[in-house]
Length: 254
Ligand code: PGA
Image (cartoon, rainbow, N blue to C red; front, top):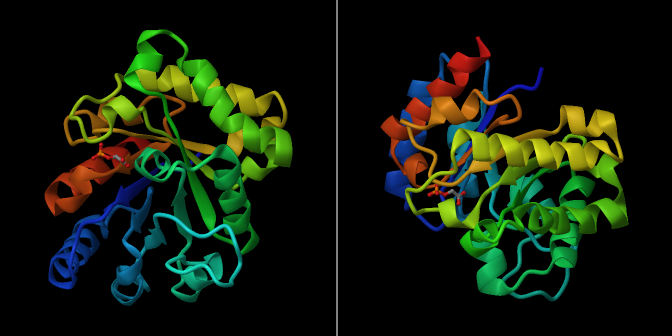
């Protein structure tokens, strides 16, 4: 049985005062939910605040990107070991908002994925198709291509102890979530593709869904057999909405 995991992706939102209210609200509302894992991925400057506020709680914290190099003359970059200095446990990689804006290649994302694993961070690898790709029926091929770079160059075992987030690009920040059946079918496809190479890595892999998850659709998405959690953007900026999603995940587990 895979434990559900709910990940907040704050993106480029927040300030010290607002974050403090969110951390306090999360701690209070999630304290009784012990059957689910929780993670908050904050902008880099707030990692120290996340560490201070969340250490000793059952809420983990993470970042939204990292550099593919261990160190060096890379102005503006942040290394994996720097994230570990702040006791980060997770890092989001390949989010479509980054791959679109900064033209990240599959090779680049794969390097970052391996860098994260090398320091003990759990990568949350985002994959997803555009609306046009879905409408023309090529979405499975697109997702397969996004996975295959890692599968072919590093092998399926790299997915053991990792997380994949299926995030249809048309559902991110649009209010238009994938239906539970659409999510289930893609999650099953992803697990199946990895299982062809490594069945135990596929069985243990948590595949979470992201894209307009909210308190009204969370239960139906999260009760699908291959939906192991959620990556939550907009609704993670509200204690009420985020905790309602977390409660929905917790109820499925018990
Ligand atoms: P959203 O973002 O919940 O605002 O759609 C999800 C994500 O991009 O991680």
